Amino acid sequence: MHNTSRLLLPLLACALLGGCAAGSATRIIGDTAGAAGGALLGHKLGKGKSLYTALGAGGGVVLSESLQAGSRGSAQKSYAAGYEKGQSDSAKRQYQALTERQRLAPQSDDAAHLRLFDVPIPEREQNGIILAPGTATLRIQQ
Image (cartoon, rainbow, N blue to C red):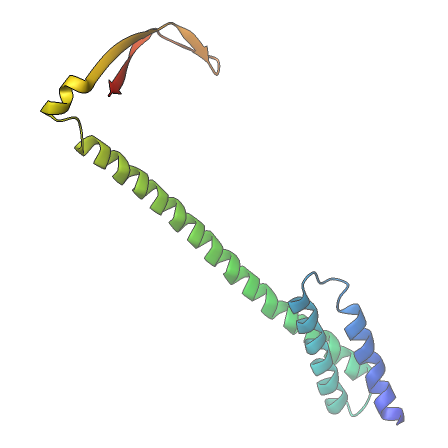
């Protein structure tokens, strides 16, 4: 009975303190399982000495954190790759829509419904840069 209480105390401490640094349930469970497995292995290999039990628990937590860090790193890389792919797809869709709009320019029978208006644009300052006066053409199709 005395041996099991020596094993249960470090396991209980690891389980209770495992949640202090963790934010997610997966991390808490992983650290607790790593600490418990390491403590059990340390207890068996150290022939019941509490120092080996504690070292095994610490090693189990370090191993668990290392595995979780690798998992988080790969998840972040996947997210970044997906985000870049989404941006690329969006740019492609915009380009294709612009190309399609230009391809479907007004035909000769639509020319009667098309009006172009030239609008003068005065000299102006934008972000500290003085822009020269110019003309903008408004295209109105009815």
